Length: 410
Image 1 (tube, rainbow, N blue to C red):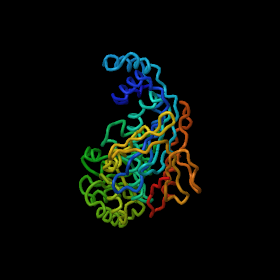
Image 2: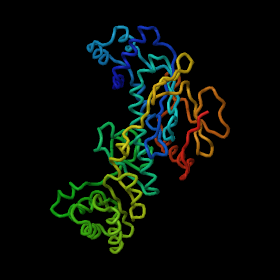
Image 3: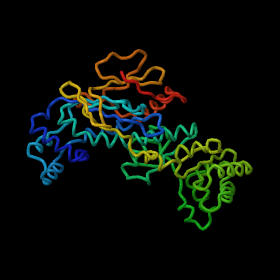
Image 4: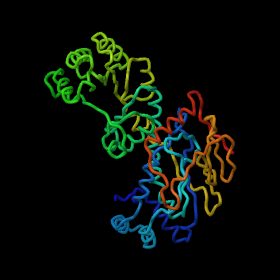
């Protein structure tokens, strides 16, 4: 097992050390994760990463190697190192379900336990949830712009290797159809797809030879990349080589809308009326929306998805809201918090969230958004990729195309 324990910040361990010295490390507390506001222009966020976080919790232990390294750094007392040696999270976590929508102020995750246990999870929690939720939200926007046309996530080369795997998982929950990343397929079961790049075409002396080699191995249903040299000439060569049963062509450059129109006309004139057109090339939701009236059958999106469509994090924060059962809150200008554990519901009409400080009676005709995930250290849920994907689809349907997700405080 690879330890996740040092996926944390220096100051979390020094806080633990000082709290132990002061005798307050074992006070019961509640931390909440929320964002103060959505990025400009966003109607909603997509909560994602819970499955990865639950998995990481089981790996958040300080082994001999981690403890030796910390001891060598010399910034912790023996008391703190001894506590870390026996660290196991035995608290409880409630959270929104993966794939659920949220807005500013939504208490998407709550951690209950001792201060010593809960404070150490801040960086791990935020690094996973901020990344995955940003990708899922970007993917959701891309998928919405594409409508019923599938989108393949192909951004692995635009981010760090492990981040690419996590991004592929999050993008699938957010509504994309598949990924180019094989590790995401192996680890999480995300459908994978892909054929060839321009390098394959350039390898051959003649473009037609490249098409013939690809089809001989992958079959006529494959997708041929046709914009390496001259798109129209390549389409003719592709149909003449494969026949009218060619599965698809891919265009990766130029004015994609105009190129798709010309490609469709040429394919139809040659009898390849069922050959699909796939377009790629750093597409985001705006570019895909502009292609809505073009004869495009599928898209590939990369950078805009794995980089969060210009918003690489969601701005989630991890804030202490309760100590010994009593509310605590920050009053810092611009960063004030609301004390007390929160509860959250969504009205049956899908249009409004209700967030209240507990205890409070559930509002009528509302569904509870928070679910118990960990109880006294025991994980209660199994990560369910397909379930999260379906949940996100249903949450969007409940929201409706013309409604904003608003926040109402009680």
